[in-house]
Amino acid sequence: MNLAGKVVVITGGVGQVGYAVAKNLANKGATVVAVVRKDLNTAQLKMSALNSNSYAILADVRDFKSLEEASKKVSHCDILINAAGFTRSIDPKNMQELTEEIGRAHV
Image (cartoon, rainbow, N blue to C red; front, top):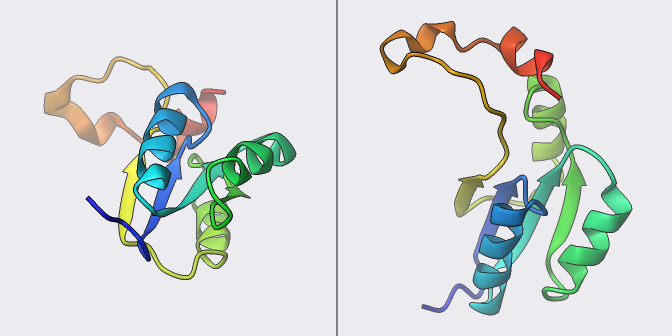
């Protein structure tokens, strides 16, 4: 599969799962944009090691305004992968329990 010219945005892009996916897609020619919530310098180094087009941006997936601002730093998005997250038991039948406040409570 050739992904040359495609832009892939990965939340949690330098975590274990996110970075493994980023490496795979960058090897296929994609520009990978890693969304990270801390240590932007380290993330930039990891992304630039993938290919010259890949980069990291700072945003917190628990903060909608932060994500909105981060989206302005991405030309477009062909593929979006969410590899960021936290663990909390939520009954799948009650997904309305998942709120922005719950997300903010987890670090």
